[in-house]
Length: 85
Figure (cartoon, rainbow, N blue to C red):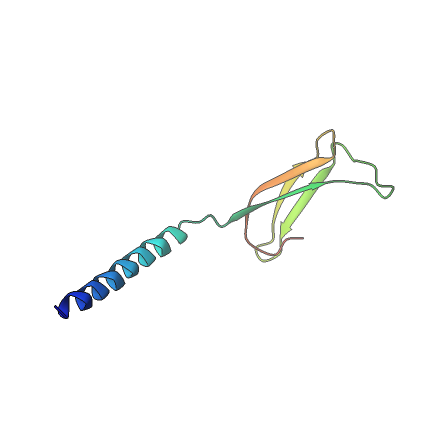
C-alpha cells in the first residue's frame, strides 16, 4: 500500500510538468509588435489636425509615418520592439 501514494506523487509531478511545458509553448506565439497612440498639440496646447507624425526606429534607421485626424489624434501601428524617436 505504500507504493500507491508514491505513484500518485510521481504522476502529479509529471502532470504539472506537462501543463507547465504546454504553457511555455503558448508564450512563444506572442506578438512582438506594438503601437504608438497619441495626440499632437502645438506650443499653446491647441490640437493640430492633419499633421505628419514620423517615428524612427533608431536601431534599424527605419521611419514610419502617420497623419493626425481632425482631433489631433494619431496611431502608428505594427512597430517592431525597439528604441523609437
